[in-house]
Image 1: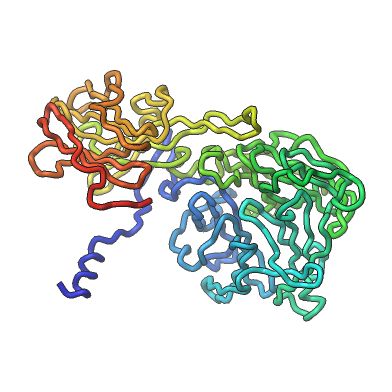
Image 2: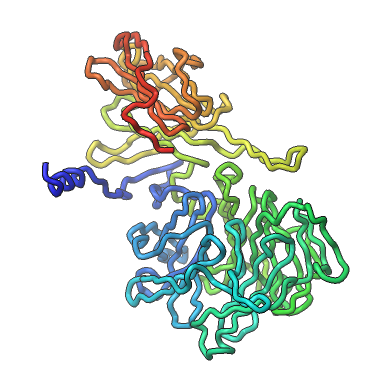
Length: 546
């Protein structure tokens, strides 16, 4: 086959995203069902469709996913519709992002993490977004007598805002090895008359005159690293991550600070008795907001942003922890509306699953499998997950431990073969939450010849559980007590079974993946009604995705 012909043949097996399949949960249509869910969400605003209204860019640092949503209004309600088409116009983002116009040309630019500090993408588009690098390899700042990288780690979310009111954007970030906040003043307007140059100078290494304990979320007020105040031992662990949100909490037109800390669920509200540039934190409030305060495992990022295009800024909070197993994963995008009538914000919690409640969002991880589960001739969907959040706590050594337990979600096809429509019928299918496992991954086949689909279930143990369907043909499955360690089949961990007649002999064989990144092939050496799975190879097809 000629190379071009081979390429064309491969392209014939490509896929297009299909987001129009209707999904219903508890009688409610999910308009963004196939957006992929959210774990650790960050938000930015951008008029994507040019209608004069800001749309929403959502960045989930779990997977570095950018999700565009188009804004509309229906009966005074803000509606956001997932629009994956617009992703193609944006650069790759890493760990965090902020959308802001740094050069004053009216076009939103993008700041994001890059190894060593901050990458800036300048928006050069007209009718559609188009970006080019504005710095290479990162922003630098005059620190002492030399320009060096303005360090922001991947576990920090900085302030990028015009603190001195001169028209260019200044930056607040933690010192990489310490507990104090650096202010890097943007000197572009002063030195060039334009905000386009991104010329920074380190103004102070102790903005706010406070320190964060390197081993906990304790805040020390009225202290700096030079001259008195709190000092830390030289062998203290280095700073491990914080999030910043500037907001005028007390209505005195000076920006205060909400400071999130790695491994803790509640941000520290610090009151600024100084100015924006010469800040002096003199008081720490016990919580914020005062009613329904932010309390999110783990490491919340709070943003002050007009989410609903109401003309007033809202608060939105979501976890920022980079770990895949230290975030709540469900009900973890908290939206607060400012209902005050004066200069002091008064935030009211509107919902804990903003946008998540319009999607199929089943916690951490999602492993969908398709089969005609109830025997009505239509393809249904069963989705497993890594797990739903159960609890987080600090152990005796000061380490954050979080626990999650898997469920299966049964979506029955209530549409037709040509126009499927999925309806959530069971959010704990087969009752597997009682097993306290993680990484539930189902596979279906009639393994005993009684006309209904039985189930094999993979999990974090690497072993396989067998569920015998005793409901009979044409009914929603009812499973007998599961058989653990089925036929002593086991891989390293996180088994992901698939049942298929691979060798064409009329019975189901077993292929399973694992955390090792390889596939294991078990041939059925029994029969269609009494399977006996025998390992042929633990490196089937030479597949290795580690």
